Image (tube, rainbow, N blue to C red; front, side):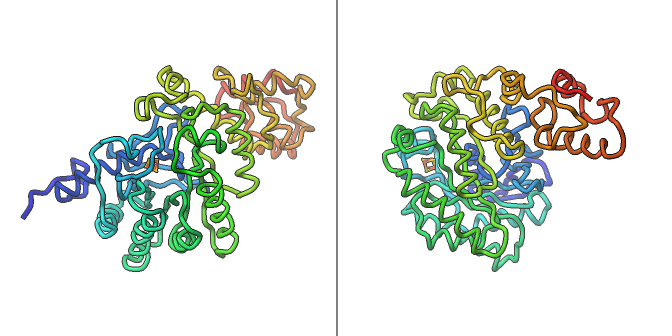
Length: 385
Ligand code: SF4
């Protein structure tokens, strides 16, 4: 009999063999660099949020708005790739670990049956060819679906360079697939990796997932992630590529993850900016732009930039409003939904409340429409009613 250790300390933790618990700790911590698949950050962009148990169980909001807790882990932290921003790249020597698909399934089902998680986010280092690595990921999902009868959320990472067949098999078992684009073009990728090819390994994989979504006959979520700041790219390139990804591949979400200083090769173009803490603010501004593109009807070309960069000190929508005095004031009794959304402080919920209210009566007071005074104060200089 081996001594048992609790992965999550106090009950209601799942009790595991010490060796399995140690490997799982390494693998769940290794997966924290990948956000694609969930909003695993707090609303102010101040840092990654952990689950209530203090380990890498993530409370997340999925692209469709559903909230749940995911077990987020790597299957293996062994990797032959050379991504310069990643602490697991081949030329580093961190403690590495792997799980078999059976071990992963046992851990997941243990947590699931105790009500601690509702879904799985599974990624991995590339420990063999892309297709062999994919086979191992797919085996986990297949056992969960076919042997354990798990019908819930499974997010699988697609390995760059995986074949069409491997992606199609993954799609059979997954609720969501993500393939991380990381950078906005070939030039930037060549600064970070000599092994990855932007078109063959990334764009073709993204296109294949997009094609599968059409044919599958059931919803399959597709997401991707940029690693912000590592390659010296500017925001203009990220914003243009984000718009293209939504248009061409109908992605459900694009995520942005600030390069974390000290984890990469050390000579990366973004190292200094990351040490100043500016990349987290950039990440936050990029999420605001993402909302403007997805929900507010903005086009990439309308986003205000200074020398290709988003100003860090002001919300991009506020900057757009200041630069377009001809658009304001907006008349709350006449403006369309999309015109209301151009007003700083007004988001989809407030815009809908205003539209509903003005069908009934004249608007005399704005206080009840806004969730807080700060948003109301932002909107007031730009509206008449
Ligand atoms: S493929 Fe790149 S990002 Fe993924 S684990 Fe390997 S080195 Fe890190």
